[in-house]
Amino acid sequence: MTQAPPSRGFSLLFLVVVGALGAFLGHSLAGAPAEEGPEVILRPSPDVVVALRELARLEGMVVYAERVIDLRERKSVFFDLLGVEDAILLVAGGEVVAGVDLRGLGPSSVDADLEAKRARVTLPRATIFSRRLDNDRTYVHTRTTDPFARREDLETRARQEAERMLEKAALEAGILERAEASVQKTVEGLLRSLGFEDVEVRFDAIGGGEAALVGGPG
Image 1 (tube, rainbow, N blue to C red):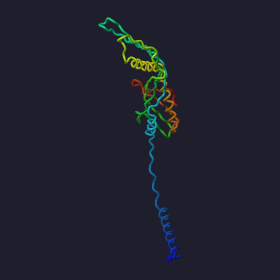
Image 2 (image 1 turned 90 degrees about the horizontal axis):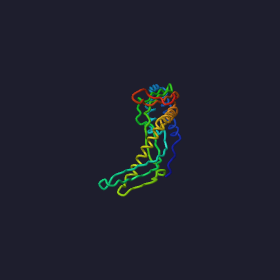
Image 3 (image 1 turned 90 degrees about the vertical axis):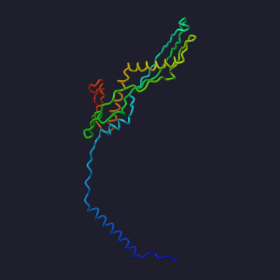
Image 4 (image 1 turned 180 degrees about the vertical axis):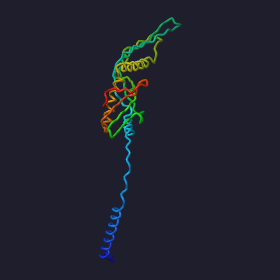
């Protein structure tokens, strides 16, 4: 059996009901009082601190250096009747990396005013992040060992001494000061990218004095 199509009168009634319902909802929404917008309070300092923390350990300077390590160990054997020596000449090349660890920054380290577009940041001092030898540039030039004198750890000790001397050379070359200057520029650029125009980046004082300004104010 073929089902009869809905009557035209039913269709017209459905359209009238839908139209009336839409008009009622529109009138109700238009007549309802508008809600007062929430008060917005902007606290920029934590946001700036988060952005700086994301940089984590910010490398500022890498120093490449070479050193020649002449390490000798002498001892007496056979009841001090015979003196023997184990000697190594190590040519060492490597790098020393310095930077600033930003993970310890807190709200007190940042004074930021978005309306004035001003930011003052105090960073920790630069430290040595790492020192390592480059195996491609480090080799034993000579090794001379008398009977009964060989020490298996002599090369290891020579490498450790080479790393220590590389760090000493980097410090004498001003790696920490250069790292701070580089990090200062990087942080200033980050702050300007966040919308600040008047930017000043300082470093914690050494010995409890006033914070140090490495370069001029940004």
